[in-house]
Image 1: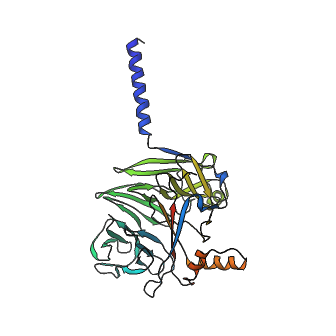
Image 2: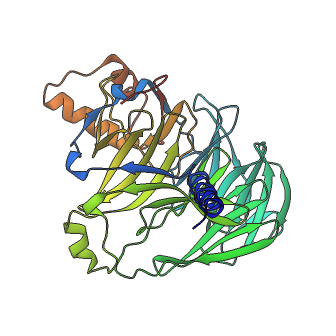
Image 3: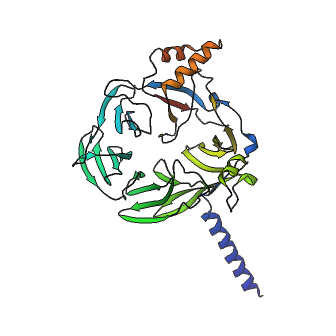
Length: 374
């Protein structure tokens, strides 16, 4: 090979390496060691303060569970009680009840069954009626604006950002119909075809203005760009990742395999997600800078002593984590602590004085530490 050809070859190889590096520049790898799962960790490692906001209980705002929670820019809470009253309730930032949204019925401007809802463009409430197969758009004051179609009838869940609609319609406990609709063009390229696996809580996730996707087999978090699915983060479970050929689910649940990545929240300094290990949901916080992680089954509230849990289908910002807890759990834990002569904080006592077994759930807002480092 002459000198000219050698130089040309080196240029081609160098260009190829640069291209590969640029292509993978946004592709992150997180290594998770499931041997380091702790039974419980104190929340002061992650958060500065934590607020508990009881949602006002009135005859017109009484419900038991939160199936989905959205928050607008003014801090108002929008609650979907899907299984109970099949209603969306609006509360202000202090938990005071404001109104319900929409009217039940089969006519125009009415919904029969709310399958899902989301705050769209910071000013609209997009409600999907899976039984009638239509969307209803309201402003955040509850005024009806218009309706449109676009998702097949069924118990669909969806995410709506700008011109993109991501949705899936579960069928028989699984989700074979996953689609992305961008400016009325639909991409249906997902197939959940793992009969050995249990159904998944969420396939699509929002962080900022990005839509992410995970299934219950892959170890990769994907995101959408221009109608394409691109890898964003690979979670390396080492020898604990699921094998390519799945076995009986009961055997998988009892094993040390890690799977079912869910509940994704991404901030500038850390990523939070959950995964399943030995049939338990594990909370994972990963520090980008230090490449360290916290893996735990539960949290200890060493800030004010009130029980603290995380929950799915809740919005989060760069500075806060939002969750909720039922009043009955707080009351039962309070009685247990009293019976066992445990120290009970003043905050806990004040919160309990506002509750009874029929009270609405309580919103939890935990504020992340600045420049958090694990």
